[in-house]
Image (tube, rainbow, N blue to C red; front, side):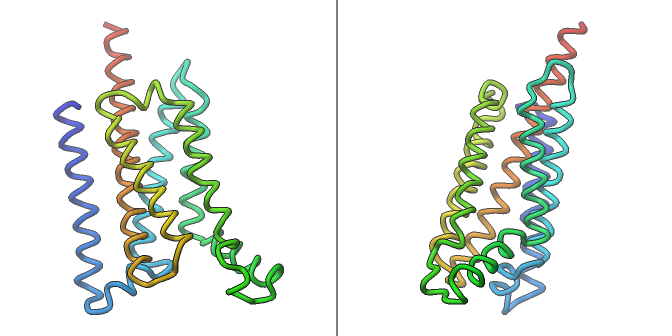
Length: 200
């Protein structure tokens, strides 16, 4: 990892931590409810991180002779940003509850959340397609952290609606999105350095 990328990554992490701290300070003593609330400032931050990651993936994918899987990654990240902002999976869950289970939450159980399990599966396929690019030394820890934290966040979201668990899920989700953005910035920097070496 170059010095510039290390400083950029540290600054990004610091900004995210400061943003979360500001949410907690502003909403105290109701910070837990504010963090887990839909369309909260944290949800806005999540969607912003996802859009930024999608933009970096698209920029890399637009380079000549780059893998089309970067476009799929960009599209997937942008779709997640839209879902975070407009709550599509919550609306799908409400539709399943109404149409299939006639408002019986106990009968529905986790069935309304199971479509979310497709996210890490699709993500794993795209990331595997890009393993050569994403397994660089500067990118590897961040991409592993992004995938692991995101998978745990989705598992917690499916497993329970307990208030404190939902807070943990939202924070893990934001951490995963931050790690993904840093990983993609590492890929973009490596591509730029490679292009400079080729031109030289």
